[in-house]
Image (cartoon, rainbow, N blue to C red):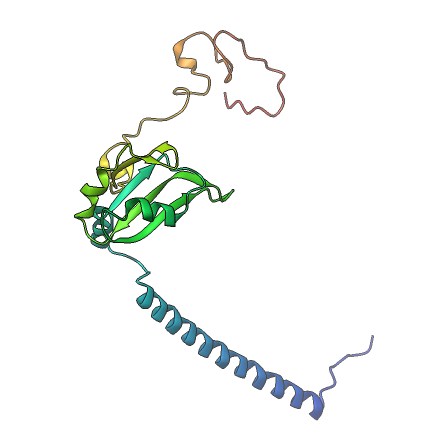
Length: 192
């Protein structure tokens, strides 16, 4: 085979230089767009009051909110606002929906402008709303289980080992009481 060396001429050098210049221009434009996007995000978060809330801010919102249960699935925020308007000024009404289907879950949260409206709203407990008795309670602050001491390291499930072999008899392999294991099952992992 003959020695194949790439043929580099002046036209190819000019094309490479032009491509490098275009890449640098695109990188500069991308940096400008990133700065502009960060500024827009910052302005929107300040304008909307959206963003990362501190724990104190979340607790303040929870102290001004009520939980409304047994809400009719066809209810709208406007109807709930009409029902709770006598209690005080309402900042926000949130009707929770299933994230997969989009259908309402049957409960809502009403956030008031001040905490004095919450006891008044709780008096509407078991009132009739769209033909249903609604449950109204003050919203509680959600604390994870490990913070409140609920999880103590106890394993969950059907027993210490699969099938509960400690309780006696033989290893049932996940079957009900008294059924012997069937050894010819395919695809069942048995480590012992």
